[in-house]
Length: 628
Ligand code: ADP
Ligand code: ZN
Image 1 (cartoon, rainbow, N blue to C red):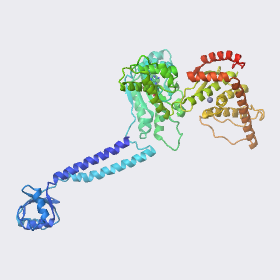
Image 2 (cartoon, rainbow, N blue to C red):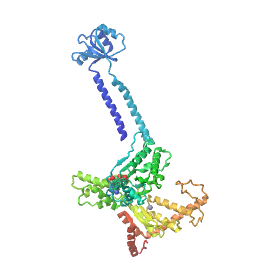
Image 3 (cartoon, protein in one colour):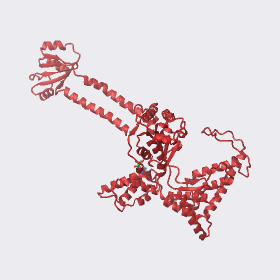
């Protein structure tokens, strides 16, 4: 887009110049006939030239009207007669002729010299090639730039925005009450930093807001500023990376200096991941600029005295790639996670955005919210807007249910392309998968209690999740406990097998974790009856360096390696058989739980307890064991 504009403007320039040039030619050359120099000389000798101007390169003048026959070809004479009104103006190109002046004097012609006005052509002869050169140059530079990411020199795109008042309050942010509650503390601090300190509150420094795009990270940060009534400085991480080395770092310094003057205030860094990608992750890229900017940010954050009342907030949707240095205490050590909103959340967000439009009385926002699982705040804002547009296009008085339905269809089609909504079949698979995990966890005495089950996609990888809450801190784990953990990990996959007779790719992470767990049990904890109490692997990672240590030479034979593999296999297949038995016996409970999940998307502990209660009664009647 920008590139196009650039080439376009160069062409534009050239065209303007050509037009100017043409005008100049037109003006400087009045309608005069061009004669050959020899014709001119013979006319001169015959005394037919009446008036003459000698330019450096051109001679122009007028001819007498009579007696031209025989001296000039017929067409020339006709042309001469046509061109001048009464006079016969002509031009001829001056050649190097030393006898010209004597001849003129001999013919007694009145003649004047003229300095030709050549500034324009001179200019042109310089500028046109220069322009062409610049055009080509920028074209190639751009090509190079596109390939290497450099050469954005001097075009500092990174902007720091400052809003004195964001005019956004917590009322504008709906459906993320937990996050709001967490940030209340920040608001309290910004409002009255001194009082807060006197009461001994520990002042937060950096708050990282994590969530999928459009979940309202920026909105939330602005709302904190709005609630506290402090200025809001914002910059985007991605803009800083494209700049010339050193500029980004200078900007960061500048930003902090400015913010300090206006404290209390909030600094917000959007897309922190662009800036804060783990250093050295891609040694070939050599993104010096990013590293410098990141280092500068770290330095600023460390050197910053929180007491001044500046809070740094940042947003990312890829916390896993952030440089660990950013997450250390004293930097972004507070994390606020924004999930995709559930049904209630979506309804509340719709309510916020519906305030600005006129709704028909029949509109049921909850029913609308129920139709768009997976929509985030930005999508819902879009939905309300689109519905309003559709209604006004149809000339309606108020936005009706039909407009919302149409808007949903449009948006969903767009989002499906971007893979942001799950199709119903996938959703069902995820529901059974998560129900499987949860049910196995409920049935295993040593497994952590299930706190929450959700099938709202989170980020890109996880389509759903079952959250377990340990009842106490553990430092030692018994084999029986590890086996229960293993069963829970396999619960999702096995549930898919039982219900659909087929498996999906969704269990990859579970299987990875299950395999790792078993490998540890066998090779480190000596929990395998076959291999005995020996350990087969030294400590893998040093707990001080955050990097995995290179693996040392293997200290066991090929045969032992094979035995380890077999042992891992047998642990896994035993576990699978156990889980299969558990779930088939409780198929009714599994299905009931999956159904509720499909309907509600999120099942919390209370709801789960209720269901299990009901299930108990039912299973007794069915003659199947209670799941608990
Ligand atoms: P992010 O920064 O997470 O990508 P934004 O904060 O830019 O998302 O959100 C984009 C828009 O979506 C907001 O301006 C707002 O209109 C709407 N929005 C997002 N989340 C919410 C929410 N929880 N409540 C109300 N509106 C929201
Ligand atoms: Zn799983």
